[in-house]
Image 1 (cartoon, protein in one colour):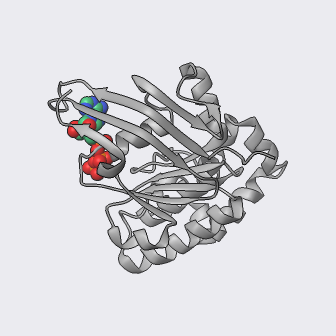
Image 2 (cartoon, helix red, strand yellow):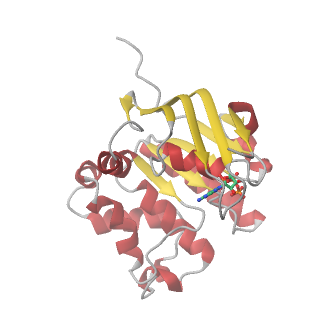
Amino acid sequence: MPAPPPALEISGLRFAWPAGRRGAGFALAVGELAIARGERVFLHGPSGSGKSTLLALICGILAPQAGEIRLAGAPFSALSAARRDRMRAERLGIVFQMFNLLPYASVLDNVLLPLAFAPERARRVGPDRRAEARRLLAALGLPEAALAAASAARLSVGQQQRVAVARALIGGPEIVVADEPTSALDAGTRAAFMDLLFAQVAAAGATLLMVSHDAGLAARFDRSLALDRIARTEAAA
Ligand SMILES: Nc1ncnc2c1ncn2[C@@H]1O[C@H](COP(=O)(O)OP(=O)(O)OP(=O)(O)O)[C@@H](O)[C@H]1O
């Protein structure tokens, strides 16, 4: 039997932000990059080097101007925006830098949100979605009392981080992409949070791609990628 395709493949990728309000323009090019199924990859680089831009391309939030991104061998970046949205919802769990929780929705509704857009993930969870959301939140160390908060906006930053990770993991997406998920945690909490994140990613059999400025975390990953080693970037387009 042929080996299964990598979780993520990039080839000949090019993207440029035009010059404008955000600066003089910025171009990013990635020749070849493959991330294996179940691999845990740490992506790092200085501020402004293009990490968030690359993650947005990998998540299909931005479309490349040239080249291709495939998820488990399937074309992704070449799809229409609507089909990319559907594939992202099914296959990717995303933890954004600012968490992007719905501030007025309850904790459980925030965790359950991706299932509304991802029928296969919803099917994997089964009929008792709220029980699965509670199980994940408990596994990620969210105190039971926090579930009673009227809205996600009432939670501490560390608690919001846990809700964001539970939302990314629910229904077992194939790839979890996390942009600086530990930036708001102190050193002690950070180590415990990473233990929980790794345990839950492993339990889901997911691939993890995480961006962080904290070089001390790199040793915990299977592979560490410096953005300037995998990509060519230019300040001006
Ligand atoms: N919406 C945008 N419009 C125009 N330029 C942008 C936009 N977003 C990012 N850029 C530019 O792209 C470059 C890379 O930014 P990006 O946010 O990807 O870097 P980063 O490595 O994630 O930085 P940080 O570590 O500070 O989050 C910067 O020069 C930035 O100004």
